[in-house]
Length: 184
Length: 149
Image (cartoon, rainbow over all chains, first blue to last red; front, side, top):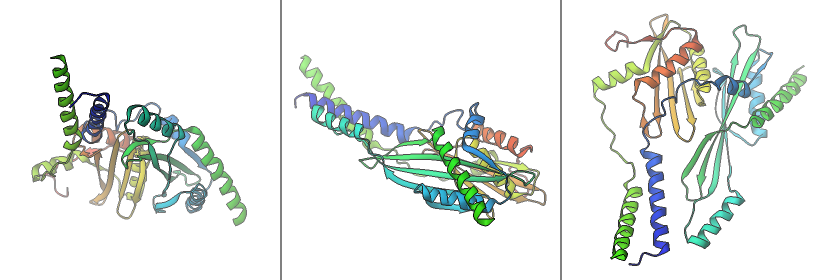
């Protein structure tokens, strides 16, 4: 057996895969501060929340559900008792830049580099009536799971883009205004 | 000679690298004995002076959101909420509330980090510290030998 460039590449690829598999399922040490409240908590909470002067929690949940449908989400879970909607949508995660990179790696080194293929975006809407009963706070959170073209889950993250949240509330406010008009 | 050493190194890397991914992470589930289960339950549980399960579950949801979790499901009738935190790792957590007598609730949280159960008391302490603040109530530790636990 000769120690060719491709042999080295293959063994490096396997070493890499081994490292990731070790990272993925062998990683058993939870980060020390994983369940600790951190400084940016308030900032994140403000970005994810809005308050509406109403006591109709049901109307807010219905409007939010309609909005999630507008955005292409499908409802997975709901509970009026505790004010919760959970919805998700599956979309392609293929990025042309990644595809180009994959082609180059295959052409130059003869190795197959996994790229993003599918993603699941999850949205969770929680409503909380204020203690005086005159207002309801809505808090939405988004997260994303990405699978590679080899079928492996290789990216899990919370979505923090402020524009995503701003857009959600802009639309929710409009929907609530429209619905209020219809009921009135 | 040099070529032979390189060849040996290359073969070694191949064998080691092949064994690593195939080694996987499967493990046989361990049977938890009574004493360990009791200790675990005590570290995961606190008592609160309230009888309001709905408010407790809603507060647990708000606390989990503050901690970066996304709520997966919740059921006020059952007194339960499950949430997951995705931050390059996955933490899944379930919080339940059940009555203890007329005026107390036992709140229990259990978590898993990737594929490992969280069994270090400091993480549950962190969660209950945040949760107590949101509840405006003191979390009381539980004696596993106490009646009604």
